[in-house]
Length: 78
Length: 418
Image (tube, rainbow over all chains, first blue to last red; front, side, top):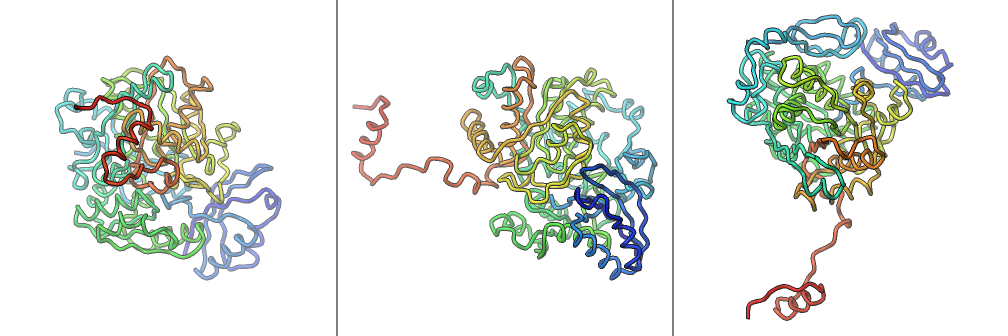
């Protein structure tokens, strides 16, 4: 399955190669579609392709690293 | 007859068929409805509109449906109140309240977007309506789906107060409370929308849904005698409404119904959740999400707004600005609006008027220019915000003497019959 997410990196994680680690540690293919990185914030629109459990694990890894992981639609609870 | 041309990516411009799509496959940008304005020019005039029934479908050629509307036929055309008492209180020349606190049927502007979303969803063959919401959107989806004979699913965080969900439960749809953090609930709702083939009004139907907000802008222009205000102050949650009001003004100008758009567009947020205002004030294009919104204006508490970037752009490019207000300022402005104009707005209305007051005081909005303040929801839904903030009634025993004493204590003279 494919999953589209928006990642917001906190300032302290901007320099970390987290997506490299995701690709290395989990059976998922990462595909960056948009990105904007500054010294204060990192934003990445990402497609994850793989088995649902692996995608879940990859997302949990990013959450544990302090990255905000949201659906591509951002906040949908209006 | 449809005047929709296609869905178009707001980022890269790629066009898509008019289906239940919302994200560009290429760049993940949001999709928006594009119209054939030349054709609309041939059939729609101010006179044609003026002869139609007073509801938002009088502008149907500018809305994303193929046929006649089938959901929410009575929605819209709410009052634009010339607020002279408020003008006096604020020391301004001309101020109006566009009052969607009395929108039909669920007392918020969400009835506009939901009736467009569900009318389009039915055209696309959907039988089930859904949304994730903590308030006005939930009420509107449940009510409009019920009236249209559609099944509905409303997803809410499990810890939402009971009083908040009565206005959704009453319509008989399915309400599902989800345990987890805001981000977890948010992600799950997106997954459900992707997995089940339902009309999630603000997800897969979003391009159509969002267009409904334009009617708020069309009505303001028509009610001002086909003129645009010099300033408009709009509350921002996801940021869609402010961009669509500006789009509405531009469309009316393209059609020649009003002159060039010179309206300055101002956004309003609560201090406890101001991701868009922060970006405007800091002059940055990046919207930094607010992880833990903390405000009594719950209907505006969206930490990572989908249209944040586009709203900031509208404010910048129109010559407007943004402002935010504390909870105390919100309540103070709710009371001012009620006491001067007899309008009981929800907390978001306090945010908008409170921000307008700051913008006037700082000179961002000129006291000599026309101002429209957008009220998008009804105060009866957020009464808990005023608990302990307004004077309680005076209690007396059922004796005339006690009332006489009360009047005397008040120090004001009233004529009495002998």
